[in-house]
Image (cartoon, rainbow, N blue to C red):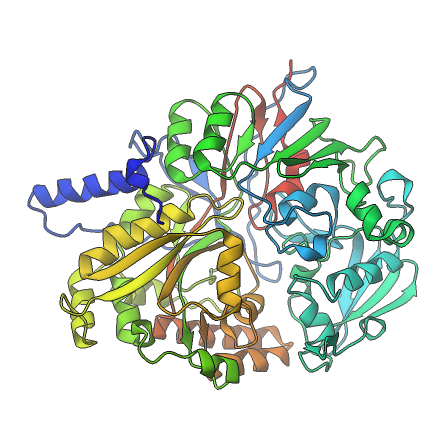
Length: 619
């Protein structure tokens, strides 16, 4: 059964858009005239706050993610912080509520990236993400370098870093253990394939001893491999080993060696982060506490304790915030606006490093046997004209004004940004004729493809939300009801949890399905590999050409060659309307201003990694 946002008394987003369209048409204006698409920029720009009551206030300026360090990058201006008053926090335990951890477990290998919301405050990575610049910086590794062929990454480890609860010093043996953890037979984590190759007869192609070489206590070599087990150039290891991913966050090998899985279940993860495990209340929350010893990084959280309660319903989280039962949470856009109107504090990521686009399922064009078996020749989205029409039916400028005013940029190809390799400066101009709102053009394309009132396209839309992504059901409903319905595409909204959605992706059970994809800033090769190849787990689109592109990328270490190939792939996606790109935007949370003064987090890494920067109102 689909959510009916129109019946929610607090829902304003979809109904506001409907009213806006009615006013425009009623005034004799015909189709809405979209505002010009903003040109993405990598330097801070000034955006005046909107005067729309339901959306104000918004931050007066935003920053797009800066180019990688190999390019000339401007120095970002940190968001001003409020100087807390001297004294103690207004509460001892701050409560940060999310919809669900997806998997309530201390066994981090049995989660996916979303459950790392509960682990991130306790752990550190070899490579960190600076909260102010969003760039990769040394963390548990002081430096690193790669071999001439790009397959071996050598890490020089920080000395003297201690694990929680006296579980000893972090050394190279912990790096090896965490690769083993990642690659356990019962793992649900995706990154192991880049280190140990594919699974053959229930075993990885490459054994751990051939992946990790311990040179000494503070030096370790790690070799990346392709699916068949051959060493390969790996240009985005800084993502794999950083807080961007978190799958290779460092946990104590000594604790697991002494206590095993039962001890992990009882004691929790033993990491090196500013917070440590206190207890887990199954079905309710996880509770962390500030570690008593001095932090190796001099992180000194304002709040002595941190609780992350699970509150699945958006309205229930909002009610808990209003009642003072929780202090920070993510909310869908309508409730964010209502909270701002009640003077609750919006907290925005430093950069527009979150992105949202629509994925079209069931396009199994690859010669891979499983892809061929899943192919359905009757699916309308197999036709590029249908996919183009679905894109042209969406008024992105109108959606942007209501969704993310002043904190977003139009996206032209899914996961492509001017700060990433492969960007094509021609896309913003080409967008005006290829993608921009043109409902009459969309109807004509559908007629050419054989669809109309007597033969409408019928789709199903996944309506679900993961932690930090509360607005995805509303975005999906808005596209279905306000845009696709107007050109004759019938779209049935189907409620499901994100775990069910993942199961459908893995099983290639997405014929005639569409869904919203809301993610962070991923390296291009990673996203291409996990989302567009026949060896991926999402399986929404797969063909032999994309498989060949990714295979070629595996053997290329030269940045210029990789940049050119990424651009070629991006244009292939642009020209074939493989998905419906929407926006880059700043991640947002809502806080109780009586408890929270400010929060600095970059946006391109797990937000809870930066809970130590949550500033308390003190008394």
